[in-house]
Image (cartoon, rainbow, N blue to C red; front, side, top):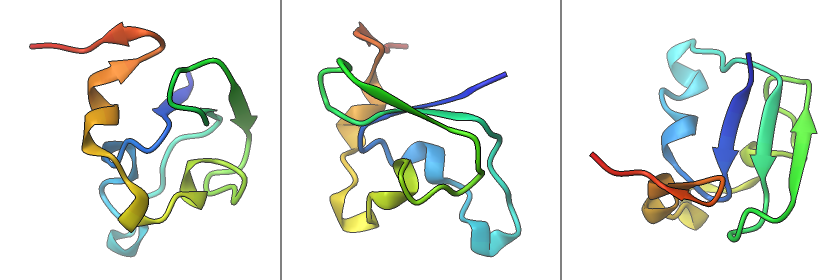
Length: 73
């Protein structure tokens, strides 16, 4: 099982760890908007992965596009 995070998508950060929730690892973080590069992080909250993106940098539209596939209802 993998946790996939696209660039600055805010949704994978919910619920917050302050709510005593731990995210699943390993995480595959697509760290560029066009999905051409990713980082694999084994630690739950690795500072080199998506947790490095601060809330003011989150982009809700990044939740609509994963691994070059548009997400739709």
